[in-house]
Image (cartoon, rainbow, N blue to C red; front, side):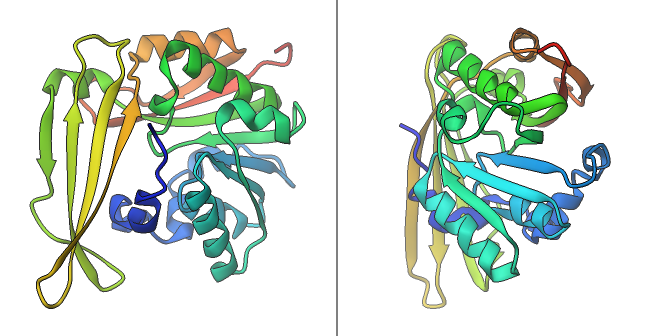
Length: 254
């Protein structure tokens, strides 16, 4: 099961320090943001705690943020209020997006933060990409980031423990990832993420969540994008890199 309702309260420990400020998170996508028309409408689906959405809104872009987790949507709305930006935040999973928005609504859709692997298998992934494609205007673009699952699976099941304390808002924590790698690509995999906060007295408070995921090869993602009318314009895929980004455009006839 994938909720992020527990991790939403401590999610800042999972975001790199460089991308915690909303403006910096948005700046990491400067190259693709230059492709937007004036008065652009942008959807940040799987918005997490809202750093990207708020950063985009701070630039004057009209932004809608969605997430399947109610707690994530709540944190996004709170961050938007803190920074004085105007964002519509909606709880919705990928398949529900067409119930909330008209087709051909957005100039750009972001699906970042390694979220697509939470779609249930090839069928769920295809449905998610179909929903995102439908909402794009002809000529619009999907911006997607992903773990390099070829690399993750090669490492097998394991326990990854941060080798130093991570400080956020004056508090320290140790971040732990427990990977359950299934025998076959198409099987359900699991990642358990734990945030162990350490207070000034040495007491430890642990929040953890077990998340389901269904990995995919890069070639499968390319084929899935093609099937829903999207053509890859930019790809940073490298089998030896931890993550990559794909920018895919919607053809005028999609």
